[in-house]
Length: 91
Image (cartoon, rainbow, N blue to C red):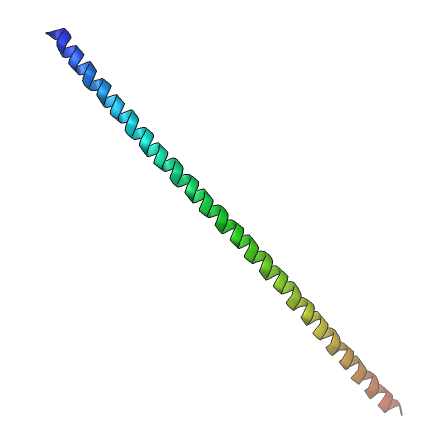
C-alpha cells in the first residue's frame, strides 16, 4: 500500500515538473521573440534618429553657410560705406 502511494506521488510530481518545464519553455520562447522584436524596433528607431540628426546637421551647415555669406556681404557694404564716408570727409 505504501509503495503504491509513493508511486502515485512520484507520477504526480513527474507530471507537475513536466507541465512546469513545458510552460516555462513556452513563456521563455515568447519572451525571447518579444525581446528580438523590441530590439528590432529600437534599432530602426535609432537608425531613423541618426538619419534625422544628420539631415538637420547638414541643413544647419547650409543655413550657417548662407548666414556667413550674408554677414560677409553686410560687412563688405559697411566697410564700403565707411570708406566712402571717410573719403568724403577728407575732401
